[in-house]
Image (tube, rainbow, N blue to C red; front, side, top):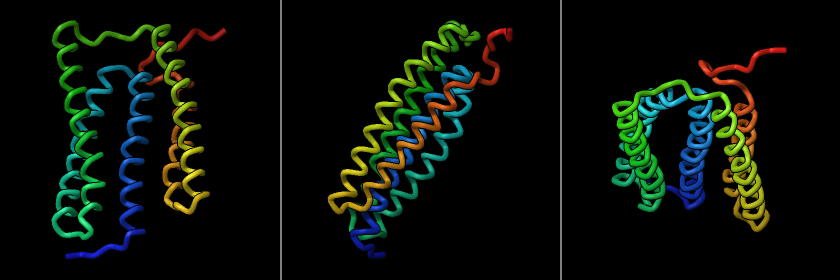
Length: 171
């Protein structure tokens, strides 16, 4: 058995969910920018990576003590893997039923504007919660605060036209 300190265990318990949520933030923006066909391809690749991470978390459960370290990694990885599988099935059903057409530029803009509103909230909450945790002595709060720059990056990316997206005519 491999024994880890509580500090190291807390770092794992904070890092894995932050990585999962950070990926979800960026995926949402990129899927809105590039469309459903891109999302299907990306979910296939991401599903494999998260499944490998889940396998590593299961091994961690078996060989690392305290056992909660492995659980803290396995839980968010299981949730994201299940969500990826479900979203992949939904997109496949849409593709079979009506196909993937080009998303109208107006609708794409509305989706991205709505995402930006949520990203400001997520970034602000991550910063406030992370800084609050750090201020009361939970140093790992800064890992949670790391979602704030991820949200800002996603906001910046949401303002760029997507590959294959219909760009507005230049004046």
